[in-house]
Length: 552
Image (cartoon, rainbow, N blue to C red; front, side):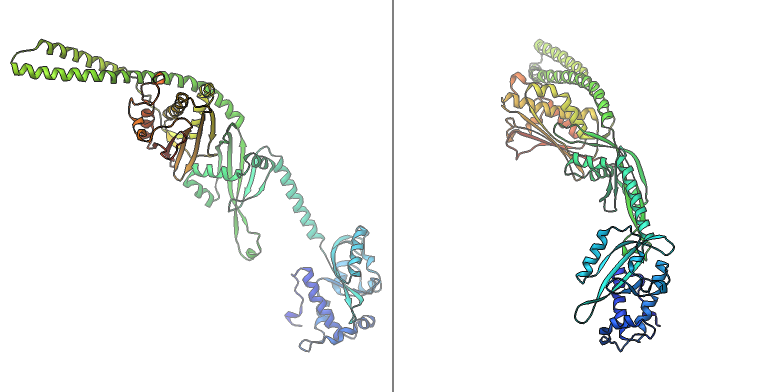
């Protein structure tokens, strides 16, 4: 016997069947003397299939040494031949089984429909493969994977059956344990009151629970895992890659998801961990290769945050009211100083003319002295007014979510928006990277822009006033668009409206004209940009951009 004469032991049963069928055919072409004569008579037609390149006993020895139980039966399934593996699998001695029916092995636990299907296939001269519950000689049940095929004579008629089977009880038991454990894990994961998702190295979800599926339905077309990961990645910055490459983890990272429209934002606290497991793919069988996985757990804290938001809004409304009162005072004083500046400049010019005339005549001019005294008094009064202007409160610079700031502004302006019948179209990016800002100054900035839009639509008598506020991330910047369907601002005034004391409002609604000037100052203070879109002609569209806060 050579090494290649043994049948491959690791092939699937169907392929082993193909090899051994060919082996038996060759066996009968060169039958050994001790083979049962009735078996030889049945396979005389195979004598024509001679292969002079192989030893006569090769296929017989292969069948004898095969690890799969092989048997040959007549048309009534009476056993005429069985190999040694048959005895090892069934426990029955070969001499006992010769002449007995294959049904002798049955434990009668197999449904009758299985046998009907088996005989139906064989009657069509086609092989059948399936599972049968058999019983060993000692009474022990085992699960057999069986393949039975008809053996045809030269005229194409079935003369005998060739059967192969092996004990797959342990394999089946292991498979069921794995399935049961998987089902148990899935049941526990599904019952968990938190969002759970397992992602592969490409961030594709390969396992999730019912809470995740519910959130997926709420977010419609967006993948919750992608939303969470993008927000956390923006927050962690370079630390994200370090944690991913080194199997790290993070806990309790808060993520705010803005849904837009009339739907309130939702908050989640996220935790995640990376780990590596052996690659189960076939090409990694002989390699020590591992795959990366990421486990994401998110707990919704929306109810808690809404309670905190309500408390915050009550305080914020009071602060904004006080801030607006102070700002109105600041604008009023600044406007008064501006109004006084013109007459005082004229008085100063007159004093200069009188002084030059007095020098030319060589005598003092009482009128000049009187005007000079009045000018000095006025300048002192103006300086006192300037010192009376309330200073801006110094605020710390911190990471700020612009969606949150804008929702605060809309909440504060709700009463005024309802009174004017303004329809608000709130279109936030679901998740925005943070920007560094002074929160109070930012609220003032966007409050001015919203108020400017409301005033413009009211002055123009817009029948169906609409205010659209949109946020989005653009590369390394965050953009805010404030747009209305009012009369708009003529293009030649796009720059002038940001000048101090310039306004396009009606006299009835005209203030000091410092709203957009103040807005521009806040934008400049935060290294941002503010301009009016020259391509928008259905009203006015302000575009504000700020750089994203860099994380370390």
